[in-house]
Length: 370
Image 1 (cartoon, rainbow, N blue to C red):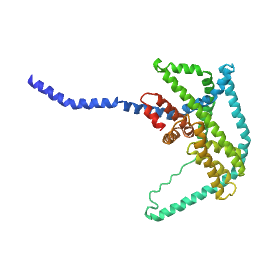
Image 2 (image 1 turned 135 degrees about the horizontal axis):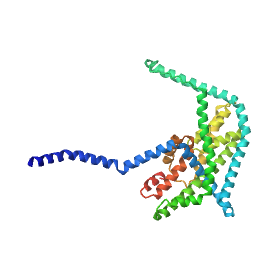
Image 3 (image 1 turned 30 degrees about the vertical axis):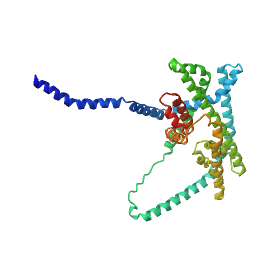
Image 4 (image 1 turned 135 degrees about the vertical axis):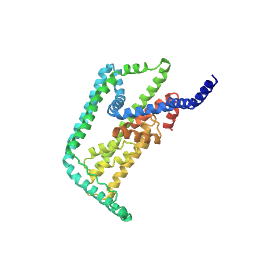
């Protein structure tokens, strides 16, 4: 009996470290931090793999917030909301088709003249390539022992069929998403009250007041952002058009439309807006000062839009610091490409509003708006 008790004590002493290690592992596995990391990983993976669905849905939401005041105005004039939503969506589509139809002729003419612009682009690319080759030769002169060593040449076959199929696949996805947007916008506008009521029913009664305040603030913020961005975009297109027309640039309206929309991209737009007018201007042998003047003027437009127009029209509702905006652009641009750059600010601003109204997440909201 005594030996059995000693054996039990020794066994318990030997198992105690193992049991404590297992307990610690269970605590780590069930800790809140690890659960949040796993949940964040799942959300990021879902956003990446379901990008086409989410981008389509978010674009429809932004368009619906933009058109909702018009629908509400028609509803106040005793028009049923469903009919008002249908009328607004149809008028918006007609306006887009009219704008596209007015640009078709200019786009066709530009496509016919594209060989004239392609030759200067090739010459500029060849000049840049020659400069890079000269730089590489000078580097090889500094380190001659590394010449010819560790050089791997990879020959890729650029099949025309594969290229066309890949472009057709992406074009098919974009067209499919674009066809869903009008239907989603109509259903969101027509069933706004039903969706709002159903959303409120998802939360306990004690939390519905706070949820309603959060959703109201998100609605006002998104509407202000969309309307303000639209006004700033129109102003940028108009002033760019006048500037390009004044300097005698070919296709001033088409170039201003592309350059003005690119100028809306935060930070990067100051450089992206240079590309269309510089490509058009390369056909004629202008001095370097001509291209520098284009870059300087478009950068000036970007600074005025970012520091004067956006704060006046959008800044009162969207409170994000420069670091948060930069991180959002990098993350959502990596996640969804060009559409991620356009949706980064409204997504981040919505996250900030939610964090400001959720207990325990306020520090994150304060950091985003610091």
